[in-house]
Amino acid sequence: MDGTAMVALAVGAFVGSHLALSHPLRAPLVRLLGNGGFTALYAVVALAALWWISRTYKDAPPTAPLWDVSDGLWAFGTVVMLIASVLLVGSLIGNPAMPGMVKAAPAQARGVYAITRHPMLWSFALWGLVHILVYPVAANIIVASGMAAFALIGAAALDAKKSALLPDLWEPWKRVTSYVPFQAIVQGRAKLGGFRPHDLAGGLVVWLAATWAHIPLGGIAAGVWRWLS
Image (tube, rainbow, N blue to C red; front, side, top):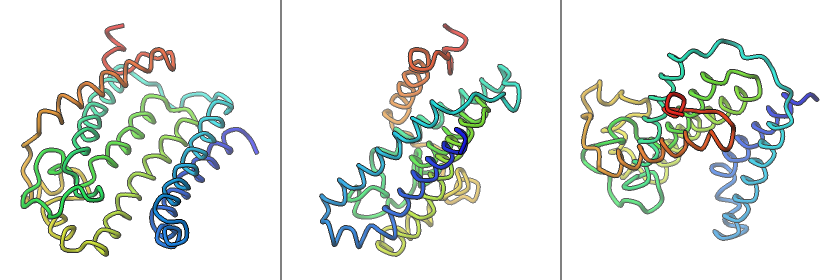
């Protein structure tokens, strides 16, 4: 099996194990191992799969980019990554998807939740999209598309699980939000706005720090640093 196929196998193992442990296998394993034991198992499997992805990615043979990456494409990706960073930071507080975060669904979605009820998972999907656009080589496309698919499939699975386990919370929340970004706003079920200071400021800091980190870690100037460095 060549190096690129090994990357695909590692990504498939990460996505498959995460979805299996998060949904069909979670309840029986919690009964068998307890919450602490299940959490430990989940962490070990996730870290092992991520290590495997990292190892196979480094060992994958270099391939030619599938298209030329222009400054315009870099600029588009830079803006999308800023949006993804705001979605990520905004998802950390007041997120009904997180266990015990809220007891009742807000009557109106605001900020990142007006955009989508899955801001964290969509931030990962956007990360994948941007990394495909600006670095279109085989190994990177496999990893980035795998992570994007993992995020979007996970969001759909989370909807199904929350609707089954917490219908009084999740069904009202679904009525004022959308899975697809901006759909609820277009349909008049939510209004754009209401971003909290930490959503925007925190997102900006994460965006600047993460794109700058590409320079020492990967030797690539990403984001605004492409034009400032």
